[in-house]
Length: 190
Ligand SMILES: CC(C)(COP(=O)(O)OP(=O)(O)OC[C@H]1O[C@@H](n2cnc3c(N)ncnc32)[C@H](O)[C@@H]1OP(=O)(O)O)[C@@H](O)C(=O)NCCC(=O)NCCS
Image 1 (cartoon, protein in one colour):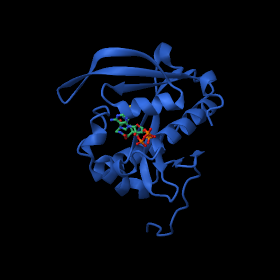
Image 2: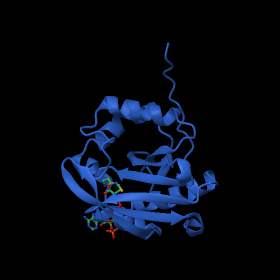
Image 3: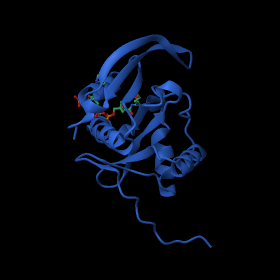
């Protein structure tokens, strides 16, 4: 019989004044599905971020994240423990194996409160400490996503170039703005 004892929350990997970041648990599935199911979020995410975003999509995602080794995708939570978004890493391979991509999103009802900036700052520092081989973090922002570009610049990422017309999302062609943060630039971010 399944235990009904409430499980303690996983220890946060990052804590800031605006949010904390911790491993997903199955109890996060409903809140993840509800927050992620928003066209204003999915429009700037890759197509593997489902839209519409169902409860089954959230179940799959949470299970995938919890089983991954190393664990690289996490939930972002408001200080009161409410689910507020997601953040994670995507390791590159071959000769780019020391560059990992960072991705994030914040639930619509938490936009404009500094959560993405604060989470990305803490998470970037955490990533370089946790994975010592990592030389750089990279983010690819679709043209028009000025909020995300502002977040990256505020954290200390450098815009390194624009891959013109690299993106086609639902028939809309956009540039991709490439941002990078080197390990040595991340020192002292906190
Ligand atoms: C981008 C995103 C993560 C920002 O989250 P957030 O918690 O609201 O970010 P912050 O509050 O830390 O900072 C956002 C800043 O951008 C500003 N901003 C937001 N939309 C903007 C726009 N269209 N144009 C200019 N600035 C904008 C905000 O006003 C804020 O600046 P301020 O603090 O000076 O007012 C969130 O909007 C989101 O999840 N978007 C959809 C998914 C996404 O784009 N993910 C990133 C993919 S690269």
